[in-house]
Length: 294
Ligand SMILES: NC(=O)CCC(=O)C(=O)O
Image: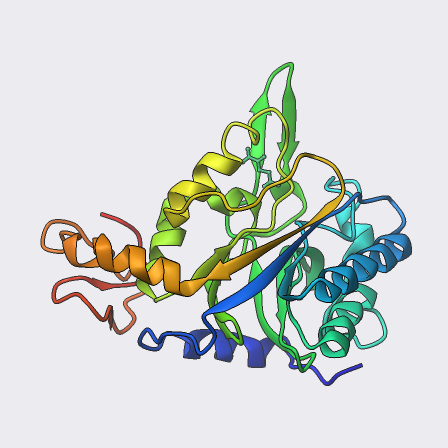
């Protein structure tokens, strides 16, 4: 298995990525989204996900993404049992597979999410690996899915998981990527934060429910990224391959320069942690981030 960084090293890398916006070296690449069936057998899930990631890489994807809790049924009955300590070299089967397959295929992987055991707490965590097999970033779901619709759906993710409290933005070979997990999509402030930090992509691995999720997953994804749908699928197990072309996005942004039109003199993101404000390239008055819309 490739060498990997400990969680604490990765946290440092995340905060170090609040650098000024830069155009990525690469302008076009293929992304592969693996939608898969999850069973209550972890070994099977890991082997299956590995097969799909390899197939996506074979179809030319240099960035491959898995869904939320791809190695474990999305149920509070399983999270504890399936959780891995990512720093435990012998006890993190899923983590090790992602590292190996990223290295073996020379791709960047956004590893959906996995139940993570960390300091006596459980988190719903996405790991991002580079083509060298190293862990580049970890995002723990910040908005846990608690819902009570009597007669329809009742679920309390927060019974088991502890919410992450850090936005995650990571510089990869295919650009700067902001990470959210499923329910994180509902909170536009997180996406605005990523946008203000110069994210080229925002990726949201998900496992939406069919009662409330279906109404929003496509609509909100479009709203967060202001883009049209270039590829999609039904509910079946599949690999969606699509081309990301940054030059088209750049053209659109030049034609419709929202960054310049935004009224930072009227509203802005504020720094709730009192950290040094980070100025967005195109704004005089728009200082951000690590904060919420006021
Ligand atoms: N896994 C989730 O976070 C589910 C979110 C969801 O379905 C929603 O409606 O929000």
